[in-house]
Length: 409
Image 1 (tube, rainbow, N blue to C red):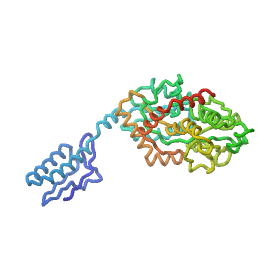
Image 2 (image 1 turned 60 degrees about the horizontal axis):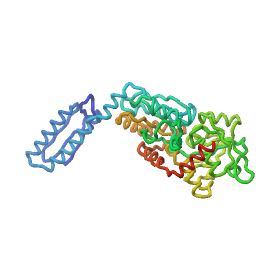
Image 3 (image 1 turned 90 degrees about the vertical axis):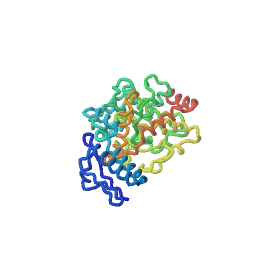
Image 4 (image 1 turned 30 degrees about the vertical axis):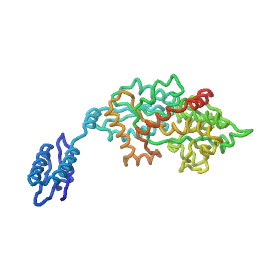
């Protein structure tokens, strides 16, 4: 027995053989029985043809053959029927504008990712809407998170691009955090991140040991409130004992880079994914030096292979736990994309699928490579699991982190 299944597509609700397969036949050969499906068949005609052939088989008492045939036929017809969810989503999104609300100013890493994504996302969303980026900077993306959670329309046309580490502000009871990270709908993360300690050559600091010991030098480090860019230097100062002065209040990494250029500060903590976009040549040329990487697994593509990781800058497990939970773990879902509670489920699913398809699209990946944007996607479901696991942090660890991050500013 041979079974040849034609490529069936749908046009205005009808089944039609793919133009590229017009010469193909649906044939079932048993004895001298043969059937052919021509182009432009409607679903009704497909069904009638199938049932007619099934009756012929039944009359010949070939019941096993009948079961096999009907199984294949049902799958073919089902595949030709559009998914109700996708159809409804396409009807909704057609002609609409989808807005990505980025919690940081233009010119930084979050902005670079979202603008690249926006150029490709529309073709993956059912209905192919227009996608735009709206920067809403403030409080390390807490302003944007509050807006998406409360004020933004809940119809599926607003996506938040917020910083995962604001989860710490929720854990610490920061009154500015008017959201529940457990209730956001997570669409995914384009890449997990690792924070680096970066200083300028002008500072005269060449290695982390320069900031430790009996007569350490001091590094003035810039911070963005409520983000790892601020949390990391505080952790390094209070947990490891590095001689760091934190100057916070910057709105984004672009502002911090200007402050480094002017000599206002010596450096800052930034992700490798963002540093590659904005300052790779400065790092390669030695204008910026990497003193530490806040990870257990060293990055393989750093220009300097000798940069110490968490285990190399700590002396005992308590220190390692605080650096991991204060920086390394929330950085796994740092550049997260979310929708608010109340958005219809089918639109959440459609958008999550569209983002993952975008992050695996060849044209998008080609543009990402040119822009030095790292893509190693984490699904929405996995992101949600990471968030919920983090929210279950032991109370004693939470109190230690809260004292370091909120009590030592």
